[in-house]
Image 1: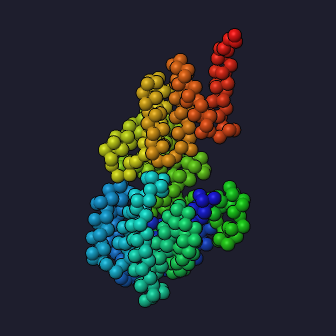
Image 2 (image 1 turned 45 degrees about the horizontal axis):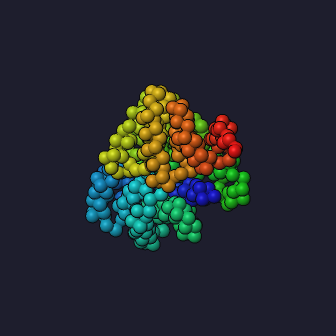
Image 3 (image 1 turned 135 degrees about the vertical axis):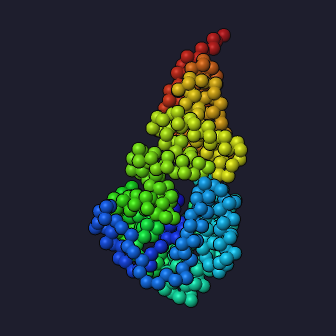
Length: 423
């Protein structure tokens, strides 16, 4: 349920991470529902945009480099650039939002588990809201202020939902939706703005299809269009100035996890991994997709690189990435090179990293013990095999294949065990 509420908060209320609007004229975006992908275009801006920092070309180019540094986990360099904007524009919400976004991307590689950056993240988002509210109170037609209010409230709701702070998440989400509608009413369609609508179009239908119990909740939301959402997301991925990377990120996950279009997912993953070679999240996702599709040589190379960067304590490279990389290397050594000793070492490393990140229910954790049991059995080390299979039996679900294999093996071992003579 936590995941489902998180999805609703994230995709229904959160605007894109930076500069969600580049064009400024009223447009009815429902017209997008009736056109083909080839017809999707960004409507030219109309009216005055004088004084809007988001549309300042020099700032745009400066932020492009800063955002790229952030995605590549060069946080210190990115934040130095963000602080430079803050010195020049101390009353504008933009630099505070960017600093908050940088904290968010420090949280992402840990699967949103670390609490280390929460206080700073919320502080920056609160300041963003305060600065944007002053702009909005002076002029309710200031669409730039609406964008920042929607985005800051949206990201705030997103983290509160992850932390199970449901009341705070609900309040922030309500504000985010309110200001998103205000921004939508006053702005022309652009790739950046389309990003949020694309995610909503897709996930509102996906939730409806996969979770019937939530359908009554969806009555209160606008109608979505999953097929259109994918087309819109692909369009933004190819054309978005600020949100292209975010769109590729979500599209990659959708193709891999929901749509099962693994070739498309791998293509996007490779693009992200090549552009941001030090982004631990992109690297491990790329390694996993290579692995599941049988590209073992490439998967091995990327996994070795991940462990090397983890050993160097590079930003973002933590236990979660170590678990992925170690398991892949263990499997490759077990099945490709038949190097059982090395495979055992990597499986044990994967187990260690899973325990460090408190992810003992993950498939990699369970299957690491399973493969250690198989290797021990192949080596003829029956006591070790028995010990590993007993662990598998304890940590697996009773109807799972791993549970059945462990139970079968232990039953056969006990049957072969010589009986003690009486007397």
